[in-house]
Amino acid sequence: MKHFLGIGAIDDIHSWIREARDLKKDPAAFYDLGKNKTLGLLFFNNSLRTRMSTQKAAFNLGLNVLVMNVGQDGWSLEFEDNVIMNGESAEHIKEAAGVLGQYCDLIGVRAFAGLEDKEQDEKDRILNALATYCGVPVINMEGTLGHPLQALADAITIAEHKIVERPKVVLSWAPHPRALPHAVPHSFIRMTHQIDADLVITHPEGYELDPRVTQNTAIEYDQEKALEGADFVYVKNWSSYTQYGKILSQDSNWMMTREKLSAAYFMHCLPLRRNVVASGEVLEGNRSLVMQQANNRTYAVQLVLKKLLGS
Ligand code: SN0
Image (cartoon, rainbow, N blue to C red; front, side):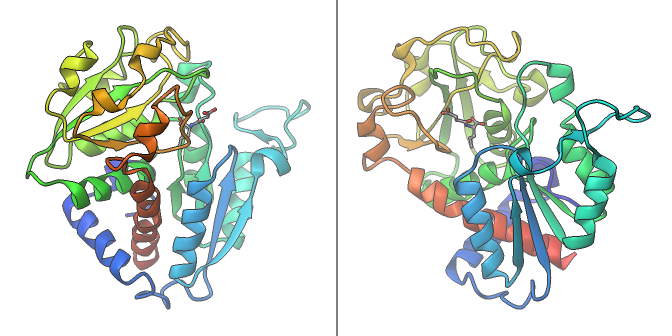
């Protein structure tokens, strides 16, 4: 594996889950692997879990870590080729990436979708330009197309809690006051296609995700029907994909409640707007796996770092 840019980098999800669970049992087992190596973390957007879990995983591997809020503190970057840079952008991504590669042995980057221009977003240009020009392995810490570290942590969490070989997993859209990206649901779907699970997606009409990702996954517009017999319910808001980045519904009937959840496990990547996306009761209830998911973020990224260091 050269980079970890998406779920496609996972060659065998079952062995990855096993290896991550082994790391969880003995997090310092490979403490010498990162000795005298440096991981750079670049944030173009906010973060709590990704930033802390990735640093923690890096420390478990003996890595040094450099963190920069590039969106806030860096020079504004140019991405186009053959431009006359007499406008706002001070530095071309080619130099910025090349320079970062001089200081870092691995680079993680977070750069959310802008949700205005689909064609532009689908290029995932910050992530891909870095991977092309920095000369060292790059890790996707949520790009415009995916959030594979979250999905890997979710796969570990499902494996730890499933009691049937092939659980029913429901991805349920929830209302939200802001337009959110598709990265989390898209990676979750891609990941779920690789584990032993029956996936059903439920959302109001108009919230259909990228058909290249959903493929032949069942879509049920009736949330109650979709939730019948669910073992895991993954709740997430996303903005419309077809009417790109638009909020088409704020219908609070789609919020996850204890009644709807029934006996299923509740999952969410966090941060979560209480009593909008899910009730406080659900979030804090004994079927909630949000803390386990957050904890598994460490071992998901630690496995990715370990694999990149070893290759
Ligand atoms: C991001 C998203 O992709 O949905 C990151 C999730 C890991 N979530 C948000 O930006 C939430 C922002 C908010 O205002 O609630």
